[in-house]
Length: 152
Image 1 (cartoon, rainbow, N blue to C red):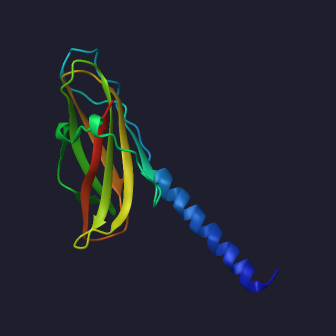
Image 2 (cartoon, rainbow, N blue to C red):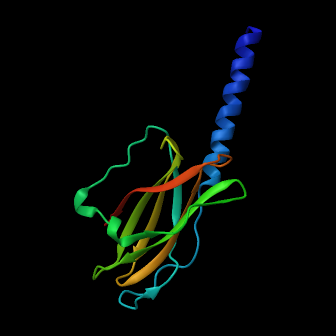
């Protein structure tokens, strides 16, 4: 094996290890599940956040569009990572699962730096549930954008 190919293998392994650490840092879950249907109010729900690989397509169904039920707070930087928090309000008469896709983009320019998918399973009717997404670690001048939201 040539010295150049050994170096390339080490670099590739380092890049893969770094990407794995990045993905691990984007996963979280928190809080108990929603209250029983019909109890209403604001409550934490089990939240799953996963990184979206560059070029990965997240399917969208217009009939499931829930963008109007998602609110966002301010995009802030905390310990070098950008954070977007918000709430989702299930105005339906039955429990629903919400999927929110957040892009972290350059400001200005809107080049996507990273994307995450936030899943909130079983949000009860008339319940408002908090969510958060993190990304673009180590970057400056970042905007947080909800690309899409769906409920099923």
